[in-house]
Length: 461
Image (cartoon, rainbow, N blue to C red; front, side, top):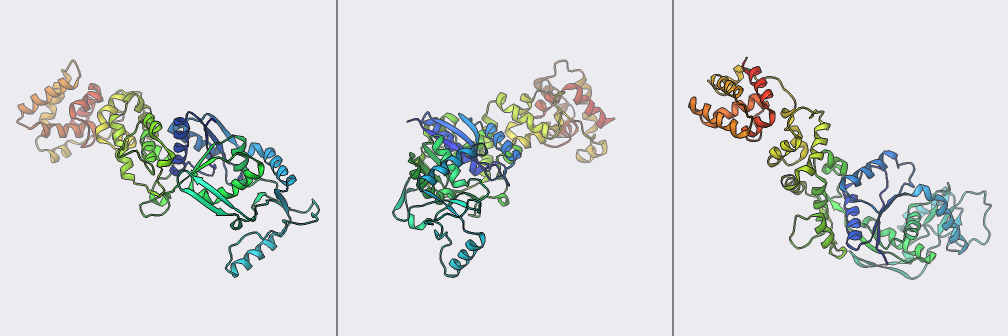
């Protein structure tokens, strides 16, 4: 039997990090078992599903590099198949038409709540001997077994037992002719030969219903693994009030996909005390049975720590495309200026995100308002003459390299009896517009001789 997992998001918004973790676990398990990973878009909620959300989900999956073997499949393209299976269940008497009006169902619910009973359908149409006219509005309900139990051998939660008496006859087709979520999921998992359903534990209540439908169809049951939810720092379900929650937002904030995946894989799963994992190590070590039963709390600082690690240690040739994207978002034209990879290497020790790196790298590519001489004098009295001497010395440098620049700086600092920092910091202010940059010799080399001289001249003229 070939292992087949699926990730099945609903396109009603951006890809939530909790859903991204589910996708990662499905992907890792399929890769580890040399199986197949299927992407399915569950878009039957046509009022809330949007093309923009579909696009955002697909882009997030590509950005995370969670490549799928099949799909994306769209449920809205399979309505005829769902109708066919519903008719099959009607013929086998595992389903029936329900003609109860909305008013009757609302009255039933009110009475049950008043009597402190669990609201549920009472089976009024379950055993009708004569059906109403087909012109009468109806829904199709699954005829759930009234006795017995459903036993789920869950890879994460262990054995879960639900009594059939606790389940009512759920609707599988609405009166408008559209299928419901619990039904489409069953048909899709059956048709796609899904062997392992790995999803959030908010779906656990749906699982016994889906198992009963699968049994009614004579289908093989998949193995289930229900993953605990992700919580915020306050112990409540992770949401926008805790900060960024979508994959796209983390991308925009300058988080690397490798860092986000490394953080998510450890958010509920572990391999000893190891914190940093390559993608191959994730595949090698991942095991469904090692997923924690308890919810995990999202820690933004831990994610930033991981991101900083990947910025510092990652291959600059691979990181540069993400860096360039961040610069483009800020409207920074990099066609004239130092090579992006060289700037990335110079800046990587000083930032936690690539967005921060891009914001701190403007001066390499964009000019700024000149620092006025009187401001320089206030910051470092008597600095104008040493800066003028530096300008003249820089003009005479034939090979513009950090080593040569450093030699000139040391020479002029000695000439004017200054500590190197007392000369370097005002110079940094003049050529970068700020007080923080990589080492001054590297900074000047990257800015380039022409731009350095122009900025010095502007400030001193």
